[in-house]
Length: 304
Image (cartoon, rainbow, N blue to C red; front, side, top):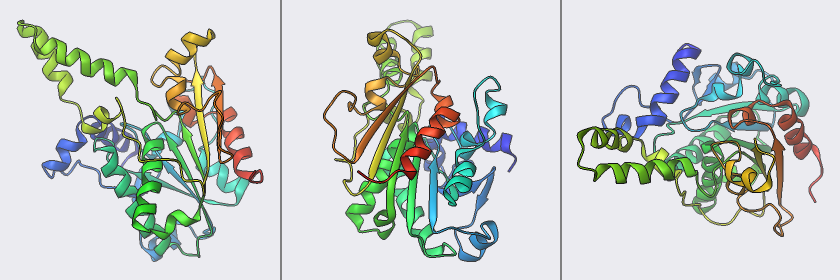
């Protein structure tokens, strides 16, 4: 699969992936490992060939809505004006002597379903990893932050051993308290549907044909308290200067309080940290040098 096609399939799955899955459409994405647009087999021999110097430290990166593993790579092609470093995974392989793996999933499915699929995939990963895994680091961007959080919760409930190896979880622009844009679309589609005008009803019908994954982002059902055995870092950005506008606007797609899960200015548990950036877009959170420097420091400093 070419990188352009991988991006297109990711976008299609985000928009109508639940429908594709229900109808067994071949375009429906199943949770898998991927790298540079290629699906990877979760088998020991295949992983040993892909990672000849496999590390016991595994960095797991999860993309956002309508995305793919390429959201973390090829950043310069996406945003040539951004202060874009190389892919976070590749940089952590260099700086932490880790191995980076990328989860590709159907972002049009319900968040709970994607979380269960990610947990199952990570169970298979540690069983097939060429060396004994000692440390797992989760990095989720946008919806991927919620999937990572949900996967940890599901693994704890099911007694999946991979979660015992997770030391850090990083949430980049995750809509933990919902995305207002989705709530606005939901409200508008309901209102337009009752207007006795063919044009407005057509618009309402089009708006209503959006995936369950998108709908979940309006007011996501979080899976419970944060795992105290894991150090959590919430990262947000704002494109506005005025404090009130900053909180409401955030990175345009996710307001600051939602991305920080309400933790800014609150008394936080010692295993929870937050970081707010100025002037970085929602997509830019996945490929910013400033963000990378923060997450690298978070991953290398001693636990409190």
